[in-house]
Length: 464
Image (tube, rainbow, N blue to C red):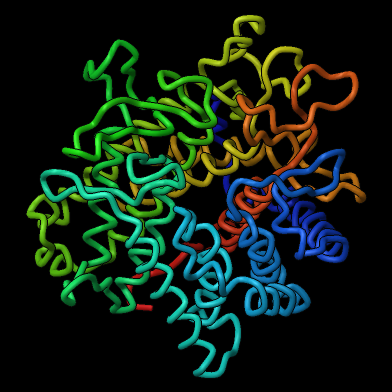
């Protein structure tokens, strides 16, 4: 269980954040100078150098988004110019990519960060650029929402690259594209000019994910425990019925792949933030009456975020860094691993620092939202997130080797598939980085830095 440091504040982490962003600038320059985009997107490091890993092109937005976040944190326009130019040159094909569930990653990290910085008054832009970025968000949200599997009771989901039968936990973070597109006044039009409300689709996806990918200890199956997450849910397309849990990157369908849980914890927390500012009238006009009551919608999002937060705190080692799956078989060889700090160089199972970075952001956002609601556990979640971040932003997780492309060490991609590099002399993957781990570490660092300086950071806000 995480040993929450109740004395931590965002300001207490500023020295670590200064070192982090100093290292980040060097890493961004290094990767940009050595990477040939014709090879594809950088995904994970091998012996400290980023390499591609063919599956889908879901990480390119993280590469250029890192540069934009670096500008946001430091004001160094070198990184604004880099991120802006790479976005304009290389990211447009992602806007109309029909084959992925990753628009919230690629689009929001690039076009979205630029639009956010304009809306915040951080950068100057001509009217055409702002309109272009708005159009990018509108298009991305509609394209993502078109990848749709309808279910009974006016529910449904944006399906994964596995096909229309597959609902991934990851995809909750792509709902950012849908709700932002809706906020900009956009809709998805279908046959006979049928209008599909993008807010409605985002809420339908969130509710479907809540029902089938998240467990609440209600006895759904023999492995139902409060806050557990299944990576994937499988549906029968003939009648829309739920069939079973599954997992692509976790150990099993009945254990919790910790990065999948992290996507849920962070995704629901940030939707709780964003939707809290949406006028009640936007909910009242939706097709499904389940979402007419804004307070009920927010309560459902809070229920999911809280359940996964509790599970994460309970199942993670004392320093807040999780192993890659809570049911990984080698954990038995580690003994009471929850009662001591995580051991990235152990001989049994790898940790996943990227899951920690994503989860820490979710914990902090949940704490902030619940504090505004005067909820009693708000400060505990906030301090838990800061506890995780404090550990991440130091060695052995912070990559201080100037020749290593990565920023956050000990990230894991696909343990069952054997996709992760195992260094000489080690028996498990360790010491390597991932593009999503680096990017979400930067999001986490920016969030805490803004809070320390009296501000805040959200992917978008209603009204802009």
